[in-house]
Length: 419
Image 1 (cartoon, rainbow, N blue to C red):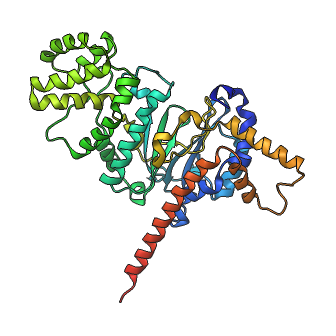
Image 2 (image 1 turned 90 degrees about the horizontal axis):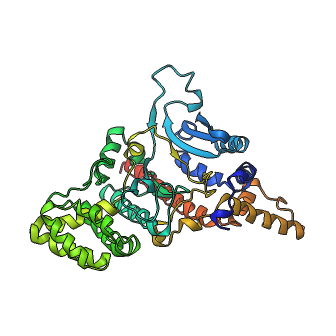
Image 3 (image 1 turned 30 degrees about the horizontal axis):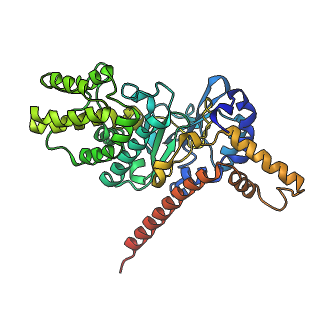
């Protein structure tokens, strides 16, 4: 079933089935409860639901998994957003003394949206994506995931496809969840390289010596650059394209390059000439200029405001995208190059897969509920659809979280023992 076969008008009929039989509540609660180590961690978490006709309900909170499940099945939200863990239950925010209701903790989150690359991609624009420009998301995940792990030491990074045109990252380490607004801003600032609004022509300026983080980021881009920019985007194909690139180099070099570009036949040839000619102008700066162009065209573009705020809401994993029908699913970073946003299941696909299974059971006269708990049946249900492999990726992420939490607790109990 492809994207075309999803009809947004069918969403009100599909959501009740999805929330009743396919949404992975058990794993979802396991994630946001963080082992139940901190009392009230889950009950004080804000959820917000977007309902039919864009009715927006904020400050929802639930004492346990059953409450969350019941409410989601009652409301059938078109979209679910996750907010911060507050000082009090968000559902009681109106009855708390003014000024005492505060956002206290939240995962460190990142939001990368393909629309922010519209000035540098040629294949698509606005909400559209294709396999050619999806490489930008692959590069973004590679660069940021490495930096979050190696430069900051964050172990637990959950990458999620947004369901349409971007990716989100949830950094779930305890140290990340406790970061203040200033600290979150500092991390986001460290990771921001492309700077300036629409009116800024040159958005990347390298300073010698180049920071190790940038060097490593350039290595990632170089791996994809020929295939993505020179062949896929053909970003030096014609005069209009050259002029955009030439506006990023010093005026003194433009005339010579223009002459070379006119003689060359392909983007690959033109790029080679650019790399060869720029160092002649200024040996040290010239080499960096080609790197600046690569960074401007390929480096991840972050929505910094999403990362800075502790109380900022972000779309939840396993939420459905109402326009595409796609489920917002976790991405296996180990198999990143083979992740295909067009192969992500839609709600209509998984509901029809479930129907087919149920029909077959009826024919075989096997009662799905005979002697099994609701949780067990739900587990079986999503495993029988294309959603199964993505829930498995989520479970592997949660297992690692659990292991490190157990390791921490053992370490703390060892430290408390007096020998």
